[in-house]
Image (cartoon, rainbow, N blue to C red; front, side):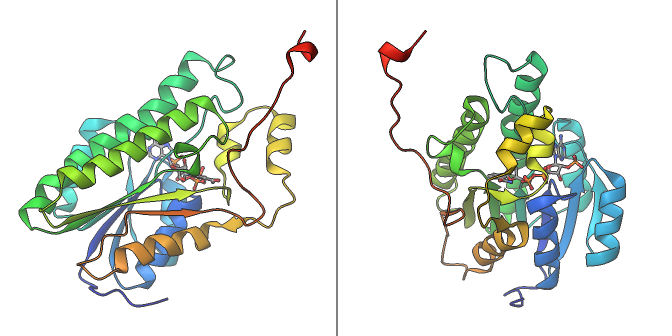
Length: 252
Ligand code: NDP
C-alpha cells in the first residue's frame, strides 16, 4: 500500500463493520493514518480493530446526537468517509414497507447530511479537510431500485453542491460511485431468498471491496491542490441505463 502523504491525518469511516467500509479501514490504516471506525456491530468492529489497529466506535449514524457526540469525542477529523448505507425496499417501491422507506432515506441521506454538518466547522477552521461520500452508480444512471436510486441521487447532489459551498475553504469533496461490489449489501437489502439469489447470481467477474477501497485511498492521497470530484467504478461485465421496450399489445 502506498504510504499516506501525511500520516498525521485523522480519519473517520462510517459503516466500517463490513464490505467497503471495513476494506477502507484496512487500506487507510495501512497507509499509516489514524482511523476511527464506526458502525453498530460491536463484535465486527473489535475484530477489525485487532486486525488493523483502527479505533472502534459503536454508532448508529441515524442517531444525530450520537453523531455529534462522537465527532466531539474524536476532535478534529481530517477525512470523513461517509460510507454507511443500505438498500431496503430494493425490488419495488410499490412493495416497500413504511419502515423500508424510512430506514433507507434516514441512513443514506439524513444521516449523511448530519455527519457532514458535524465535521465541517473544524475542517473549515483548519482550512483543510476531505469529505468522501460513497454514493452509487444508481445515483447517476438508471440502474435499479427507485428508492435506493433516489437516496443515492440525493447524495450525488449533496456532493456536487458541497463542493460549491466549500469552494475557497480548502476542504475537498469526493464522491465514490460504485457499481456492483462484492459485499453483504444484498444480504441486508433483500429478505426473500429466491430474489436475493437471483440478484447475486450475476456470473460476472465482480469488483471486491478492497478494490473499491483503493479508489478511496487514491482520492485522499491526491496532492492537496487536487480535488478528485468523482470516481465511478463497476465490473467490466456490468453496465448501466439502456433503452427498454414493453409493447402495449403485450400488456395485460
Ligand atoms: P455492507 O452491507 O457490507 O456494509 C454496510 C455498512 O453500513 C455496514 O458496516 C453497516 O454496519 C453500516 N450501516 C448500515 N446502517 C447503519 C447505521 N444506521 N449506523 C451505522 N452503520 C450502519 O454493504 P456495502 O459495503 O456494499 O455498502 C457500503 C456503501 O456502499 C453503502 O453506502 C452502499 O449503498 C454503497 N454501495 C454498495 C454497492 C455494492 O454493490 N455493494 C454499490 C454501490 C454503492 P452495521 O450494520 O454494523 O451498523
